[in-house]
Length: 183
View 1 (cartoon, one colour):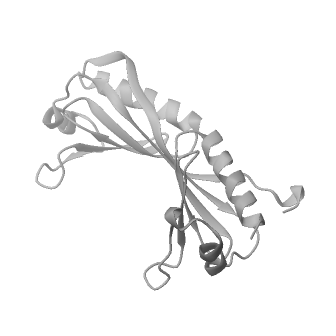
View 2 (cartoon, helix red, strand yellow; view 1 turned 180 degrees about the vertical axis):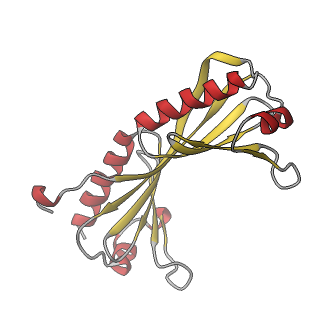
View 3 (cartoon, one colour; view 1 turned 180 degrees about the horizontal axis):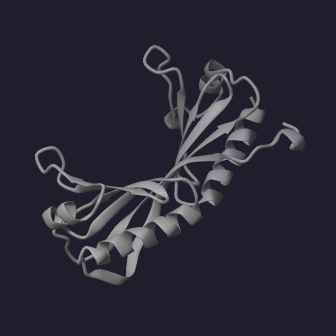
């Protein structure tokens, strides 16, 4: 692939999780915070939808949160700040330093050329590959270092998941390009 055609992996979603408080009264939270839903019969946590940035936060009574829908590091920082402000405004005693970290980055990438998935299966280490075209049109490849799972499609499109940093994702793409270049 020529340097002119190289594109960076595109972030589709970032998931972060951690603890923001020792405990949270979910009933009170859902009654006082706008766009916060609680249905304990369906899910053990509250679902809070923030608009700026547009992210969704799963809030648990243990004080733990899962944030999803993040598209950049800047959105992560702004979203966490927005979340903490809303929690404090609702009367939640938050940690001075919330322990929330990125746990998964999902990216898409276009290799820019056709991938012969059958040839990939024949050529590479089968322990790291799952490919059942009758069930799913993509090949699942588990990269050991960095620990990333890549979905390869014959169109050349690739989805990478499991990275905790963009450096992990970029290293995963470089590994795939090198591996596929040898096929």
